Image 1: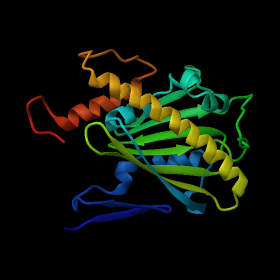
Image 2 (image 1 turned 30 degrees about the horizontal axis):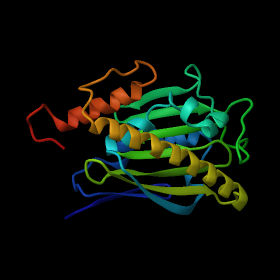
Image 3 (image 1 turned 180 degrees about the vertical axis):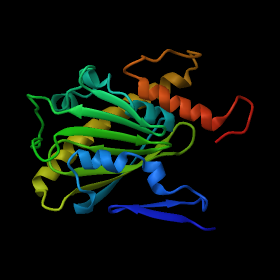
Length: 234
């Protein structure tokens, strides 16, 4: 079966559909967004791959990623670094399948690592259907990888971490420890949502117009991929 292989900086993308559109079409504004954040991806060095699983449906994991109104309560470490106030934390459907969050560095930012550097704000990008990309304030850094369905109530994650070639090992270790803490908090959240969904206690719900705008867009993409009720979908 023919494959389509393309690259962006150090990242290699493989598509099993031989007739797939070019990678540039899927990424859309992502390369420019990352460059605007102060990162030259060609200058990054691979550090490691993190693998994890969580007992929650992949769509719940994606929805959790696509909003941050829970951050002030659920992520004290993240909120001490990034300004998560609704009027400061920006959500942007930058392209039909590219959903972007921008988080400015707090004036009184507190973190276990030095957050003042070439990268002055957080950038968190979702590329439909299941790729996430994260940039944290400080030295140049990118983590990216897929959210992989592993059954109806389990999700596997891969995140490849890249850093500036001259980033200090201690700085990287401190950022990774902070990142692990935020990830553990999110895992606990989505497990609870999965448990709630499994009770079938609610037939539906209402999304917040502003804070959950990207969640709404993701749900539209899912519904479009599945097709009308009663038809075979993706």
